[in-house]
Length: 88
Image (cartoon, rainbow, N blue to C red):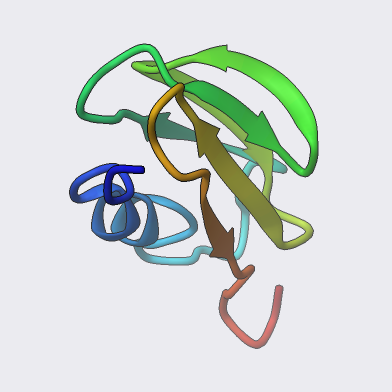
């Protein structure tokens, strides 16, 4: 088994649910998901969303688990925690 996908945790952690929270925001956020090598299966909360590279749309109203799987690699999961301003 090879090590998990390179730089995935950092990319997802920084991309998902980050940025300035505003009083008015959309209920979803687009999150780019990539892996090296490309072609990993993307699952969000257990539901298949396609293969990398791809941008997935996630609800801002709850946490998510994003899992990547690819033959000869260990599955890799990142937990994306919902965070925002106190008024959200």
